[in-house]
Length: 156
Image (cartoon, rainbow, N blue to C red; front, side, top):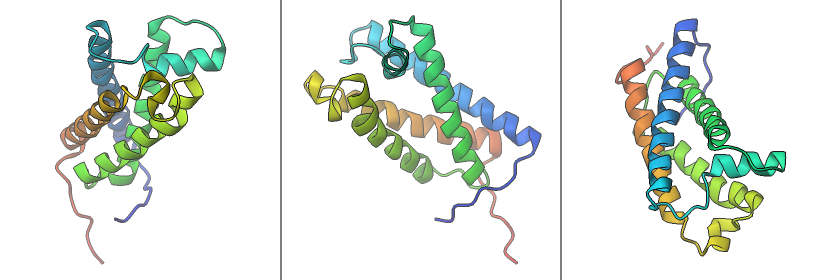
């Protein structure tokens, strides 16, 4: 795996940001539906819990969704800055894995849910895993739509 940041044109920046916003929006809708229907064992969306922890007060759901949207968009843009010429499900899954691990061992403890969500009985592990797998699939699919199936740079 070769990792290198390459300059992006304005058009590529717009496409990368659009992919990020679309990925974040789809995931937000799925997560809100899961929470409202009782499928999610989380007490609230992680983005909202983190924003509330940072600011030290109760916040409305749209603030948490905006926080999540910015986070997802940032990492989608990073993914595309690295691999837009060859968007790979393997690379998207690798990024999702890193973010999944960060959620479970960094962000969950920060918001009081314990490492791996153990303060919530460990129940969040499966839905958070599913959410990050969906992130990888959506990011990869939208990246291929926006940037093509992958083109190999010319070898000198």
